[in-house]
Image 1 (cartoon, helix red, strand yellow):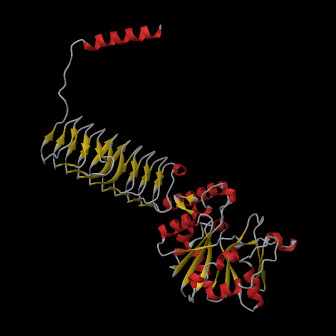
Image 2 (cartoon, helix red, strand yellow; image 1 turned 90 degrees about the vertical axis):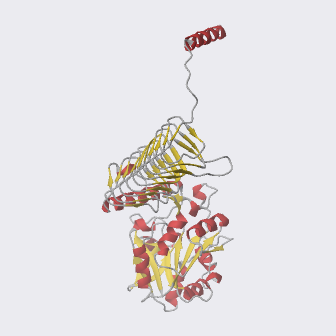
Image 3 (tube, helix red, strand yellow; image 1 turned 45 degrees about the horizontal axis):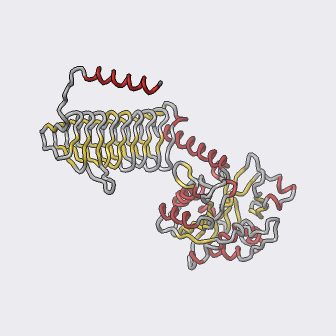
Length: 448
Protein backbone atom coordinates (compact mmCIF):
# COMPACT_ATOMS: atom_id res chain seq x y z
CA UNK A 1 0.00 0.00 0.00
CA UNK A 2 1.35 3.42 -0.95
CA UNK A 3 1.49 6.14 1.70
CA UNK A 4 1.06 9.89 1.85
CA UNK A 5 2.21 12.07 4.73
CA UNK A 6 0.13 14.98 5.91
CA UNK A 7 2.22 17.06 8.29
CA UNK A 8 0.46 19.80 10.22
CA UNK A 9 2.56 22.92 10.67
CA UNK A 10 0.17 25.86 10.60
CA UNK A 11 0.24 26.88 14.26
CA UNK A 12 1.68 30.19 15.36
CA UNK A 13 2.97 28.83 18.65
CA UNK A 14 2.10 31.82 20.82
CA UNK A 15 3.79 30.26 23.87
CA UNK A 16 7.10 30.40 21.98
CA UNK A 17 6.83 34.22 22.02
CA UNK A 18 8.56 34.32 18.64
CA UNK A 19 8.18 35.74 15.15
CA UNK A 20 9.41 32.38 13.83
CA UNK A 21 6.74 29.77 13.06
CA UNK A 22 6.73 27.19 15.83
CA UNK A 23 7.66 24.26 13.58
CA UNK A 24 10.81 26.08 12.40
CA UNK A 25 12.40 26.24 15.84
CA UNK A 26 15.40 23.95 15.72
CA UNK A 27 16.47 20.80 17.50
CA UNK A 28 20.03 19.63 16.80
CA UNK A 29 20.37 22.15 13.99
CA UNK A 30 17.22 21.23 12.06
CA UNK A 31 13.70 22.67 12.24
CA UNK A 32 11.21 20.48 14.10
CA UNK A 33 9.33 20.22 10.82
CA UNK A 34 12.34 18.54 9.21
CA UNK A 35 12.56 16.04 12.08
CA UNK A 36 8.92 15.10 11.43
CA UNK A 37 9.57 14.82 7.69
CA UNK A 38 12.63 12.63 8.32
CA UNK A 39 10.55 10.32 10.52
CA UNK A 40 7.87 9.99 7.86
CA UNK A 41 10.43 9.46 5.11
CA UNK A 42 11.10 6.00 6.57
CA UNK A 43 7.78 4.95 5.00
CA UNK A 44 8.99 6.04 1.53
CA UNK A 45 5.84 8.14 1.00
CA UNK A 46 4.52 8.79 -2.47
CA UNK A 47 3.38 12.26 -1.39
CA UNK A 48 4.38 14.60 1.42
CA UNK A 49 1.91 17.38 2.15
CA UNK A 50 2.78 20.10 4.65
CA UNK A 51 -0.08 22.24 5.96
CA UNK A 52 1.24 25.75 6.67
CA UNK A 53 -0.38 28.86 8.08
CA UNK A 54 1.62 31.39 10.09
CA UNK A 55 4.85 32.15 8.23
CA UNK A 56 3.84 29.90 5.34
CA UNK A 57 6.61 31.08 3.02
CA UNK A 58 9.31 30.27 5.57
CA UNK A 59 7.67 26.91 6.31
CA UNK A 60 7.57 26.09 2.60
CA UNK A 61 11.25 26.99 2.18
CA UNK A 62 12.23 24.71 5.07
CA UNK A 63 10.07 21.85 3.81
CA UNK A 64 11.46 22.03 0.29
CA UNK A 65 15.04 22.32 1.51
CA UNK A 66 14.61 18.81 2.90
CA UNK A 67 12.28 17.41 0.22
CA UNK A 68 11.97 19.44 -3.00
CA UNK A 69 8.93 17.36 -3.97
CA UNK A 70 6.99 18.25 -0.82
CA UNK A 71 3.75 20.11 -1.44
CA UNK A 72 2.82 22.94 0.92
CA UNK A 73 -0.84 23.90 1.29
CA UNK A 74 -2.31 26.75 3.31
CA UNK A 75 -4.63 26.81 6.31
CA UNK A 76 -5.42 30.52 6.48
CA UNK A 77 -7.96 30.15 9.30
CA UNK A 78 -7.01 28.10 12.35
CA UNK A 79 -10.21 26.10 12.81
CA UNK A 80 -8.79 22.92 14.32
CA UNK A 81 -6.86 19.83 13.32
CA UNK A 82 -9.69 18.35 11.26
CA UNK A 83 -9.91 21.55 9.24
CA UNK A 84 -6.11 21.54 8.83
CA UNK A 85 -6.03 18.01 7.42
CA UNK A 86 -8.88 18.90 5.04
CA UNK A 87 -6.59 21.43 3.34
CA UNK A 88 -4.59 18.51 1.91
CA UNK A 89 -7.59 17.12 0.03
CA UNK A 90 -6.87 18.73 -3.35
CA UNK A 91 -3.18 17.83 -3.19
CA UNK A 92 -4.14 14.16 -2.75
CA UNK A 93 -6.95 14.11 -5.30
CA UNK A 94 -7.05 10.69 -6.94
CA UNK A 95 -4.60 9.16 -4.47
CA UNK A 96 -5.74 5.67 -3.49
CA UNK A 97 -3.30 4.85 -0.70
CA UNK A 98 -3.01 5.46 3.02
CA UNK A 99 -2.56 8.85 4.66
CA UNK A 100 -0.69 9.31 7.93
CA UNK A 101 -1.16 12.55 9.82
CA UNK A 102 1.95 13.81 11.62
CA UNK A 103 2.68 17.02 13.48
CA UNK A 104 5.50 19.42 12.78
CA UNK A 105 5.97 20.13 16.47
CA UNK A 106 6.21 16.43 17.44
CA UNK A 107 9.70 15.59 16.18
CA UNK A 108 10.55 12.22 17.74
CA UNK A 109 8.15 9.64 16.24
CA UNK A 110 10.33 6.67 15.32
CA UNK A 111 10.47 4.78 12.04
CA UNK A 112 9.58 1.58 13.92
CA UNK A 113 6.42 3.13 15.33
CA UNK A 114 5.27 4.37 11.93
CA UNK A 115 5.98 0.95 10.45
CA UNK A 116 3.82 -0.60 13.17
CA UNK A 117 0.99 1.80 12.29
CA UNK A 118 1.25 0.88 8.62
CA UNK A 119 1.12 -2.81 9.52
CA UNK A 120 -1.95 -2.26 11.70
CA UNK A 121 -3.68 -0.58 8.77
CA UNK A 122 -3.79 -3.96 7.01
CA UNK A 123 -6.43 -5.13 9.49
CA UNK A 124 -8.08 -1.89 10.70
CA UNK A 125 -9.66 1.08 8.98
CA UNK A 126 -8.36 3.66 11.45
CA UNK A 127 -5.08 3.44 13.40
CA UNK A 128 -4.27 5.91 16.18
CA UNK A 129 -0.95 6.27 17.93
CA UNK A 130 -1.30 6.26 21.70
CA UNK A 131 0.89 6.19 24.77
CA UNK A 132 0.58 5.51 28.48
CA UNK A 133 1.17 8.87 30.10
CA UNK A 134 2.99 9.20 33.40
CA UNK A 135 0.94 12.34 33.95
CA UNK A 136 -2.08 12.32 31.63
CA UNK A 137 -2.78 15.98 32.37
CA UNK A 138 -4.74 17.59 29.58
CA UNK A 139 -4.08 15.02 26.87
CA UNK A 140 -6.99 13.59 24.90
CA UNK A 141 -8.01 10.12 26.12
CA UNK A 142 -8.29 6.96 24.01
CA UNK A 143 -11.41 5.04 25.01
CA UNK A 144 -11.13 1.34 24.14
CA UNK A 145 -14.11 -1.06 24.28
CA UNK A 146 -14.11 -4.75 23.42
CA UNK A 147 -10.62 -4.57 21.94
CA UNK A 148 -11.51 -1.72 19.58
CA UNK A 149 -10.77 1.97 19.85
CA UNK A 150 -14.24 3.39 20.43
CA UNK A 151 -13.56 7.12 20.49
CA UNK A 152 -11.10 9.86 21.39
CA UNK A 153 -12.22 12.41 23.95
CA UNK A 154 -10.48 15.77 24.38
CA UNK A 155 -9.70 16.52 28.00
CA UNK A 156 -11.91 19.58 28.16
CA UNK A 157 -14.86 17.51 26.90
CA UNK A 158 -14.14 14.35 28.93
CA UNK A 159 -16.14 13.05 31.88
CA UNK A 160 -14.43 12.28 35.19
CA UNK A 161 -14.45 8.57 34.34
CA UNK A 162 -12.86 9.27 30.96
CA UNK A 163 -10.25 11.56 32.53
CA UNK A 164 -9.15 8.65 34.71
CA UNK A 165 -7.97 6.78 31.59
CA UNK A 166 -4.16 6.94 31.16
CA UNK A 167 -4.01 5.80 27.52
CA UNK A 168 -3.55 9.11 25.75
CA UNK A 169 -3.78 10.40 22.21
CA UNK A 170 -0.67 11.52 20.32
CA UNK A 171 -2.72 12.96 17.47
CA UNK A 172 -1.00 10.74 14.89
CA UNK A 173 -3.60 8.93 12.77
CA UNK A 174 -3.43 6.57 9.79
CA UNK A 175 -6.30 5.74 7.44
CA UNK A 176 -7.02 5.28 3.79
CA UNK A 177 -6.87 8.80 2.34
CA UNK A 178 -10.36 8.67 0.84
CA UNK A 179 -11.80 7.43 4.16
CA UNK A 180 -9.94 10.15 6.06
CA UNK A 181 -11.42 12.99 4.02
CA UNK A 182 -14.90 11.44 3.95
CA UNK A 183 -14.89 11.16 7.74
CA UNK A 184 -13.60 14.74 8.15
CA UNK A 185 -16.59 15.94 6.10
CA UNK A 186 -18.83 14.71 8.92
CA UNK A 187 -16.88 16.37 11.74
CA UNK A 188 -18.67 19.22 13.49
CA UNK A 189 -17.47 21.91 15.86
CA UNK A 190 -19.98 21.49 18.67
CA UNK A 191 -17.38 21.35 21.44
CA UNK A 192 -15.84 23.54 24.11
CA UNK A 193 -13.31 25.08 21.72
CA UNK A 194 -15.61 25.45 18.71
CA UNK A 195 -13.05 23.63 16.55
CA UNK A 196 -13.16 20.78 14.04
CA UNK A 197 -11.27 18.01 15.83
CA UNK A 198 -9.52 15.38 13.73
CA UNK A 199 -9.99 13.03 16.66
CA UNK A 200 -13.76 13.01 16.12
CA UNK A 201 -13.30 10.80 13.05
CA UNK A 202 -12.83 7.76 15.28
CA UNK A 203 -16.30 7.98 16.78
CA UNK A 204 -17.80 8.69 13.36
CA UNK A 205 -15.97 5.71 11.85
CA UNK A 206 -17.11 3.38 14.62
CA UNK A 207 -20.72 4.51 14.13
CA UNK A 208 -20.35 3.53 10.49
CA UNK A 209 -19.18 0.06 11.50
CA UNK A 210 -15.56 0.69 10.60
CA UNK A 211 -12.76 -0.73 12.75
CA UNK A 212 -10.25 1.28 14.77
CA UNK A 213 -7.27 0.32 16.89
CA UNK A 214 -4.41 1.79 18.89
CA UNK A 215 -0.68 1.32 18.32
CA UNK A 216 1.24 2.26 21.45
CA UNK A 217 4.70 3.79 21.72
CA UNK A 218 6.93 5.21 24.42
CA UNK A 219 5.72 8.55 25.72
CA UNK A 220 9.02 10.22 24.78
CA UNK A 221 8.26 9.68 21.08
CA UNK A 222 5.12 11.77 21.33
CA UNK A 223 6.80 14.75 22.97
CA UNK A 224 5.21 17.91 21.61
CA UNK A 225 6.99 21.26 21.76
CA UNK A 226 4.94 24.33 22.59
CA UNK A 227 7.31 26.56 24.56
CA UNK A 228 10.98 27.47 24.85
CA UNK A 229 11.28 25.31 27.95
CA UNK A 230 9.82 22.31 26.08
CA UNK A 231 12.17 23.04 23.17
CA UNK A 232 15.13 22.88 25.54
CA UNK A 233 13.85 19.58 26.97
CA UNK A 234 13.46 18.21 23.44
CA UNK A 235 17.04 19.22 22.62
CA UNK A 236 18.27 17.52 25.79
CA UNK A 237 16.35 14.36 24.91
CA UNK A 238 17.75 14.30 21.39
CA UNK A 239 21.30 14.81 22.62
CA UNK A 240 21.00 12.13 25.30
CA UNK A 241 19.77 9.62 22.72
CA UNK A 242 22.45 10.64 20.18
CA UNK A 243 25.24 10.29 22.75
CA UNK A 244 24.03 6.87 23.80
CA UNK A 245 23.75 5.75 20.18
CA UNK A 246 27.29 6.97 19.46
CA UNK A 247 28.68 5.09 22.44
CA UNK A 248 26.79 1.96 21.42
CA UNK A 249 28.41 2.31 17.98
CA UNK A 250 31.91 2.33 19.47
CA UNK A 251 32.63 6.05 19.88
CA UNK A 252 34.61 7.17 22.93
CA UNK A 253 33.53 10.38 24.64
CA UNK A 254 35.43 11.39 27.74
CA UNK A 255 32.69 13.79 28.84
CA UNK A 256 29.61 12.86 26.78
CA UNK A 257 27.34 15.37 28.49
CA UNK A 258 29.43 18.19 26.93
CA UNK A 259 29.29 16.87 23.35
CA UNK A 260 26.48 18.11 21.09
CA UNK A 261 25.46 16.39 17.86
CA UNK A 262 23.66 17.65 14.79
CA UNK A 263 20.53 15.90 13.60
CA UNK A 264 22.51 14.12 10.87
CA UNK A 265 25.95 13.65 12.45
CA UNK A 266 27.73 10.42 11.46
CA UNK A 267 30.65 9.23 13.63
CA UNK A 268 32.69 6.08 12.91
CA UNK A 269 33.71 3.54 15.54
CA UNK A 270 36.88 4.04 17.58
CA UNK A 271 36.68 7.79 17.12
CA UNK A 272 37.61 9.72 20.27
CA UNK A 273 35.69 12.90 21.06
CA UNK A 274 37.09 15.07 23.83
CA UNK A 275 35.00 17.47 25.96
CA UNK A 276 33.04 20.46 24.67
CA UNK A 277 32.82 19.53 21.00
CA UNK A 278 29.90 20.75 18.87
CA UNK A 279 28.80 19.05 15.65
CA UNK A 280 26.56 21.31 13.57
CA UNK A 281 24.64 19.75 10.65
CA UNK A 282 26.35 17.96 7.80
CA UNK A 283 29.31 16.31 9.55
CA UNK A 284 30.77 12.88 8.86
CA UNK A 285 33.74 11.61 10.86
CA UNK A 286 35.26 8.31 9.82
CA UNK A 287 36.57 5.61 12.14
CA UNK A 288 39.63 6.18 14.27
CA UNK A 289 39.66 9.97 14.14
CA UNK A 290 40.26 12.18 17.17
CA UNK A 291 38.25 15.35 17.75
CA UNK A 292 39.95 17.27 20.50
CA UNK A 293 38.36 19.62 23.03
CA UNK A 294 36.45 22.80 22.22
CA UNK A 295 36.26 22.18 18.48
CA UNK A 296 33.31 23.12 16.24
CA UNK A 297 32.54 21.16 13.07
CA UNK A 298 29.94 21.94 10.41
CA UNK A 299 29.28 20.61 6.91
CA UNK A 300 32.60 18.78 6.73
CA UNK A 301 34.17 15.36 6.29
CA UNK A 302 36.97 14.01 8.48
CA UNK A 303 38.71 10.86 7.28
CA UNK A 304 40.20 7.96 9.22
CA UNK A 305 43.05 8.77 11.57
CA UNK A 306 42.71 12.54 11.36
CA UNK A 307 43.25 14.69 14.44
CA UNK A 308 41.25 17.91 14.83
CA UNK A 309 41.83 20.51 17.50
CA UNK A 310 41.80 21.49 20.25
CA UNK A 311 39.98 24.76 19.57
CA UNK A 312 39.63 24.08 15.83
CA UNK A 313 36.83 25.14 13.53
CA UNK A 314 35.87 23.17 10.44
CA UNK A 315 33.39 25.04 8.27
CA UNK A 316 31.28 23.82 5.33
CA UNK A 317 33.09 21.93 2.56
CA UNK A 318 36.18 21.26 4.63
CA UNK A 319 37.48 17.87 3.49
CA UNK A 320 40.17 16.22 5.60
CA UNK A 321 41.81 13.12 4.17
CA UNK A 322 43.43 10.36 6.21
CA UNK A 323 45.91 11.21 8.97
CA UNK A 324 45.57 14.96 8.54
CA UNK A 325 46.34 17.10 11.58
CA UNK A 326 44.40 20.31 12.25
CA UNK A 327 45.71 22.01 15.36
CA UNK A 328 44.69 24.62 17.87
CA UNK A 329 42.92 27.78 16.70
CA UNK A 330 42.90 26.66 13.05
CA UNK A 331 39.92 27.39 10.79
CA UNK A 332 39.31 25.49 7.55
CA UNK A 333 36.60 26.37 5.02
CA UNK A 334 35.89 24.97 1.54
CA UNK A 335 39.29 23.32 1.38
CA UNK A 336 40.68 19.84 0.80
CA UNK A 337 43.55 18.89 3.06
CA UNK A 338 45.27 15.87 1.53
CA UNK A 339 46.59 12.81 3.32
CA UNK A 340 49.15 13.43 6.03
CA UNK A 341 49.17 17.23 5.71
CA UNK A 342 49.48 19.38 8.84
CA UNK A 343 47.93 22.72 9.71
CA UNK A 344 48.96 22.94 13.31
CA UNK A 345 48.61 26.45 14.74
CA UNK A 346 46.67 29.69 14.42
CA UNK A 347 45.99 29.49 10.67
CA UNK A 348 43.12 30.13 8.26
CA UNK A 349 42.80 27.86 5.21
CA UNK A 350 39.92 28.80 2.93
CA UNK A 351 39.14 27.97 -0.71
CA UNK A 352 42.27 25.88 -0.97
CA UNK A 353 43.83 22.58 -2.01
CA UNK A 354 46.60 21.42 0.31
CA UNK A 355 48.80 18.62 -1.02
CA UNK A 356 49.74 15.41 0.75
CA UNK A 357 52.23 15.75 3.61
CA UNK A 358 52.43 19.54 3.22
CA UNK A 359 53.28 21.46 6.38
CA UNK A 360 51.47 24.74 6.99
CA UNK A 361 53.31 26.94 9.47
CA UNK A 362 51.70 28.83 12.33
CA UNK A 363 49.83 32.00 11.43
CA UNK A 364 49.44 31.15 7.73
CA UNK A 365 46.49 32.76 5.99
CA UNK A 366 45.04 32.09 2.56
CA UNK A 367 43.86 35.54 1.49
CA UNK A 368 40.95 34.21 -0.56
CA UNK A 369 38.50 37.14 -0.78
CA UNK A 370 38.99 40.39 -2.66
CA UNK A 371 35.76 41.98 -1.49
CA UNK A 372 33.74 40.61 -4.41
CA UNK A 373 35.01 37.14 -5.36
CA UNK A 374 36.63 34.12 -3.73
CA UNK A 375 39.93 32.84 -5.14
CA UNK A 376 41.75 29.54 -4.75
CA UNK A 377 45.11 28.69 -3.21
CA UNK A 378 46.85 25.48 -4.29
CA UNK A 379 49.75 24.02 -2.32
CA UNK A 380 51.57 20.99 -3.70
CA UNK A 381 52.57 17.81 -1.89
CA UNK A 382 55.48 18.01 0.57
CA UNK A 383 55.52 21.81 0.43
CA UNK A 384 56.61 23.75 3.52
CA UNK A 385 54.83 27.02 4.25
CA UNK A 386 56.77 29.14 6.70
CA UNK A 387 55.06 30.68 9.72
CA UNK A 388 53.07 33.87 9.18
CA UNK A 389 52.89 33.48 5.40
CA UNK A 390 50.16 35.40 3.58
CA UNK A 391 49.09 33.53 0.43
CA UNK A 392 47.28 36.07 -1.75
CA UNK A 393 44.96 34.03 -3.96
CA UNK A 394 44.77 33.04 -6.72
CA UNK A 395 48.20 31.56 -6.16
CA UNK A 396 49.92 28.20 -6.15
CA UNK A 397 52.94 26.76 -4.39
CA UNK A 398 54.49 23.77 -6.13
CA UNK A 399 55.48 20.39 -4.78
CA UNK A 400 58.40 20.43 -2.32
CA UNK A 401 58.51 24.25 -2.50
CA UNK A 402 59.01 26.48 0.53
CA UNK A 403 58.03 29.96 1.64
CA UNK A 404 60.08 31.95 4.11
CA UNK A 405 58.43 32.95 7.38
CA UNK A 406 56.68 36.30 7.23
CA UNK A 407 56.36 36.29 3.44
CA UNK A 408 53.50 37.75 1.43
CA UNK A 409 53.19 35.46 -1.59
CA UNK A 410 51.50 37.11 -4.56
CA UNK A 411 52.99 35.05 -7.43
CA UNK A 412 53.10 31.32 -8.09
CA UNK A 413 56.04 29.44 -6.57
CA UNK A 414 57.39 26.68 -8.85
CA UNK A 415 58.03 23.21 -7.50
CA UNK A 416 61.18 22.96 -5.44
CA UNK A 417 61.70 26.74 -5.15
CA UNK A 418 62.07 28.87 -2.04
CA UNK A 419 60.01 32.06 -2.06
CA UNK A 420 61.01 35.04 0.10
CA UNK A 421 58.75 38.08 0.02
CA UNK A 422 59.60 40.42 2.88
CA UNK A 423 61.53 43.67 3.37
CA UNK A 424 65.21 43.57 4.34
CA UNK A 425 65.69 44.02 8.10
CA UNK A 426 67.64 47.09 9.27
CA UNK A 427 68.79 47.73 12.86
CA UNK A 428 69.07 51.41 13.90
CA UNK A 429 71.65 51.60 16.69
CA UNK A 430 70.27 53.10 19.91
CA UNK A 431 67.10 54.39 18.25
CA UNK A 432 64.73 52.40 20.50
CA UNK A 433 66.13 53.98 23.69
CA UNK A 434 65.94 57.50 22.25
CA UNK A 435 62.40 56.90 21.05
CA UNK A 436 61.25 55.52 24.43
CA UNK A 437 62.72 58.55 26.21
CA UNK A 438 60.89 60.91 23.88
CA UNK A 439 57.57 59.11 24.36
CA UNK A 440 57.93 59.06 28.14
CA UNK A 441 58.52 62.80 28.13
CA UNK A 442 55.47 63.40 25.97
CA UNK A 443 53.31 61.22 28.23
CA UNK A 444 54.54 62.98 31.38
CA UNK A 445 53.86 66.39 29.81
CA UNK A 446 50.35 65.34 28.79
CA UNK A 447 49.45 64.10 32.30
CA UNK A 448 50.21 67.47 33.97
